[in-house]
Amino acid sequence: MTQPPNQPPQPGGFGAPQDQPQQPPQGGFGAPQTPPPPQGPPQTPPPPQAPPSGAPQPGYGYPQAPQPPQQPGPYGQPSGPYSQPGPYGQPGAYGQQPGPYGQPQQPGPYGQQPGYGYPPQPQYPGGPGTPPPGSGSRNPFKGKPALVIGAVVAALVVIGGTVFAVTSGGDDDKKPVAEKSDDSKASASGNPVNPGDGSGDGDSDPENLNEARQAGESKVLWYKEAPDAPGSGADAPGMWITDKTAVKAAYKQVVAYNVGDGNPTWDPITFPQKICAVTPQQSGDGKVVVAYESGTSDRAKCNQLQQIDLNTGKKGWSDELADGALFDSAITIEMSITGKTLMVGRSQSGVAFNVDSGKKLFDKKKYGDSCFPTAFAGGSKLISVASCDATGSNEHDEMQELDPTTGKVKWTQKFDKGWTVARTYSVDPLVVYSTNEDKKAWNISTFTDGGKFRSQVGFDEDFGPECGWAILDRDLQGCKGVATDSTTLYLPTEATSGANEVVAINLATGKEKWRVKSPADESMLPMKVEGGKLIAYVQPSYDAGGQVVSIATGGSSHKPVKLLQNPASTAEIENGFYSKDFDWVDGRFYLSTTRLTGNDETKEKLMLAYGK
Image (cartoon, rainbow, N blue to C red; front, side, top):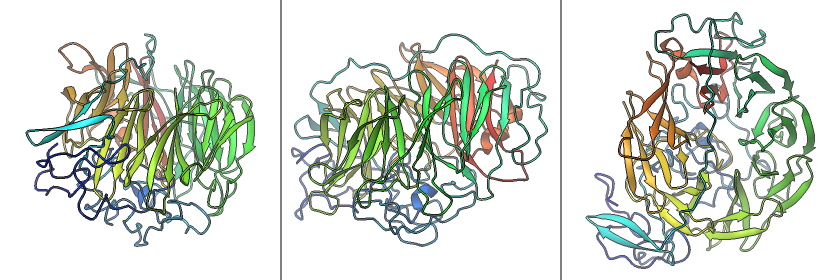
């Protein structure tokens, strides 16, 4: 791998001079690729962020805790988050930058320790976690990749100044992450349905969003106005699509609409306090869990759990999540569903429940070398990430796969000192984005079903998925715009202006298979793989709506084929969301905001559905 232009080689470890003989790495996964400098192994970064987030953003600049390697999309760690100004002008070093208001980040005894002395969150325009206007959820930082390879599983070769991983075998028999949807298509005529009831901000009169629609453009099948939100803004996490219902969480409500006509399918569920966490997944029979806060003070905890049936709107079991041991609070949590297991992560531990009954299944607590589980990822597998010996000489991260029913550890993979697991782009196959603050470097690696290192992205590129605005936690599954199937990882490149590219990367080797340029002068983001085709969303411009395209994953031609062209008349709405969620299901494109501005002077939209 070559060094970024005009940047001197980094001494020792990842990113070390590429023209020196390589020495077998020391230690576990992520060991240095070159002989360490005389002073010893890479310097230990600030204590691993207990629940760090993986993307830089206003969320990242909060004084509550040091942030994990800023993830410009795993995307390349910056030439550095470290050297470039943060979203509000502060230096962008992971966990080292001062807060948005000049307040230094303060690591807790085990990394991020929300509560127990943490200062209240500063209020940005639009409220906590709101990115700067117009920034979407992209990371403003650029980065430098570094190879991370375990000593016993791979060797390195240097060819033409570029470092590549030579791995021993690999498990190619993986299941695709995305399931195929049926071929049913959406259709609509007339004006889009606005299920709004007048409770949202701004004028509630329905708009005809199809009035200026041009030939060949898709239709807005229906849209929903956002509920009333405070002037400081509010979160709108979670969007779940079933074969009948589109469900969205926003501020204190969960609302549901018929996927075809947008009419309400069940009455909104309203909570006494704001929603603070949701399960990104739904169970096989359409169950999700929503968490809301215990009160309105700065010390309120995200500990009130409520199960919901997406198809009926019926509320199932509810529970209050207790705090763990000292410094292990539920001020912020993350949740995921694997099979019938709901995993709830606190700042230093996790609790598993049966998603149907609410019965507690097991605890995931401190283990081994002072290893504190700080983040979890769910789906077809349950992955746990722990920060170990955070204040000692053996500081490192560990990743484990857990049996979702019993909590039994299936395998453990240790990362070298200085490397932080920031994101999982996929759990099956397992694709991990990690960062190293000291080296100002990032790494994207894949693993076998048994947790063994398989490959890593073996070329220098700035990638640009959209990775949420988490504040206090790692948010392992907070990235949009990245997809996988059983053999390939699909990543969008970062474009400072104009079109970007989507790169198909071989999971077995980490090498590029092919790449394709966006069909418009805007970035193209992978969504999912279905029926042998990659489905991608092309972002809107100021005068043209977004597109949904399909790209053949096999064969010699990968030219994007347009499935939908959203109306130019709604481009302002598409562009107006601070951050957004999107999905393609059964021929319909769903777009929603994940952050409400609370602006009373505009007709703020919550969600739109497009189709032919």
